[in-house]
Image (cartoon, rainbow, N blue to C red; front, side, top):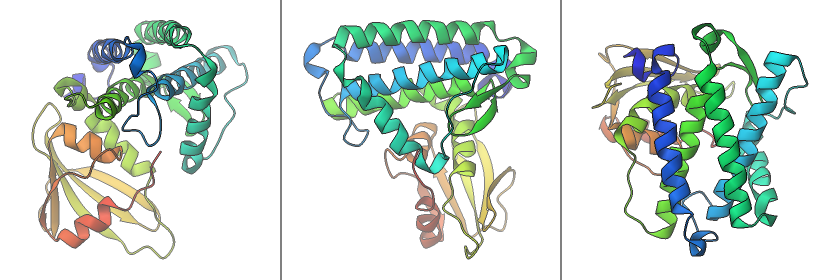
Length: 272
C-alpha cells in the first residue's frame, strides 16, 4: 500500500502524523527532570543522550538539504560501518546542555524538519537527492522515515530504561516495515568467502503484511517480495517485533523450518 510505504509521496501525510505523534510522546517522557539521566534501552546511553543524538542527527540533515538545494558543502562523510561510533560521539557532545536548553534546541530542529517535509513536492520526494553523512546521496523520502525511526524506536528505548510499559504503536511500526528491509540490505556481514543463504520473511499483520525472500551472499543482500515456496526456513514477525529485531532492540520472530539457518541469518548484520 503506497500510503504506508515511505518511498511513495502518498505516504507523506501518514509519516508526518506519525513523527508528530512519536515526537510528542518522547518529549513528554523528558518532562520529569529525574528521568534526564536515567538509563535507556540504547546501549549505555542516558535519556539526555537520546535527545543529544536527535539534535546532532537532525541538524546534520539541514546541512544535507542545504547542499542539495543551494550547492553548499555536504556533511562530512563516514563509512556506514563506523556509524555507531560517530553517532555515539555526536550524542554525548550535548551532555553539557541543561535539560531545557536541549529540549528547546531539539524542538526547534524538529519544527524545521517537519517544515522541510511538509514542503517537499511530489517530484522532490524521490527526485531530490540529499547527501547523507553515512550513506551518500539519498532520495528525500528517506529523511522523514529516518525521523520516525529516531522518535519511535528511541521512545521505546527510554520507556525500556525507566521501566514504563511500552510497545511500538501500530501505524508507526507499519510505516517502518519497508525501511527495515532496506536496513538489512545495507548492513549484512558478508565477504568473499560467505556461503550464500536464502530464506523467507513473513510479516503477519498490518498495512505491509506479506512475504519477502531475502538472499545473502558474497556480494551483499537482496530482497524480493513474493512467494516463499521451496525455502527451508521462514521467519514470521508482527510489525513491531520486526522493527525492534531489525534495529537490534530484541531477538524476536517465529522460525519455521531450519532454525539454525534462522539463527545464522539473524546474527548476520552489523548494528548502526
